[in-house]
Image: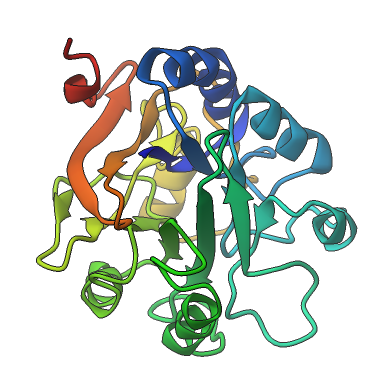
Length: 274
């Protein structure tokens, strides 16, 4: 199975990069499953129903979220009727939506997609380890699922790394999101789980985490309130991780994906061989 995960889509630049490039990449690399984090897709804050549909039409099999899940109030309603949209599983009981979903590939494989949010430097949430354990026990790799993808939306790399080792051998991919900066630690853990501390963002990297630079810089210097942060509008870069998965649901090859300006290009060239 060929799996592609794309990091946080930030604003129009990120959406344009995904919608223009993903259909071509799905065909070029014969991708079986694509998961996209869309929690910053609507002006940098949350996601709307139309944008969620746009990402799915572009080729996303599932869209994950994070701490901005409900910044767009309409998400409180439409998330219940969109089975491919996944918010963190460790939101309190009664929160609208779902923390995991199973998508079926064109080849008939079942992919469990789980989203959890970290607790270090973020709002207090239910235990993310207990939440992901609950979801994986209900749909274990090799039994009910042919592949398992876990999006850990968190600030601290230590918390994300702990998740990777905790799930090693029980997930196909554990990938971090939220910081909008791709890390260089993509690898396959000893038990066969692909891991990356942060997939980065799909958006304009001539920015401060996808936002126009002036206001974030001013706030850091002057420490006073100011205008609202605005999304950067330059050309977007795709950023994420590509994983090849064997019949056991474990990773055999992994590569970082970076296509666009400002960052050194990286792609899963092993899929272009032959």
